[in-house]
Length: 79
Image (cartoon, rainbow, N blue to C red; front, top):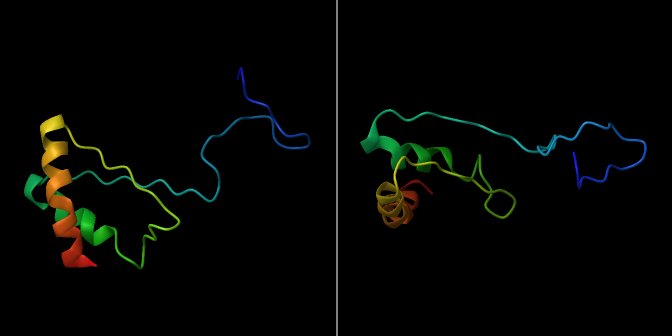
């Protein structure tokens, strides 16, 4: 891979996702439950915002804007 400098003595295949990184996907089919389900998932037992980050995908820009406004209040109910 151009531009990638490997460390001597390590595996030569490049994997941008390190062993300590967890990727988890959940498909939400009930639109009205989306924010509640995310808030329940992101709780102090499972998610530490000092150490972790999350990416939440939404189908449209309008929905992103709506969720961005509503999510802080939804999250407060679960934390």
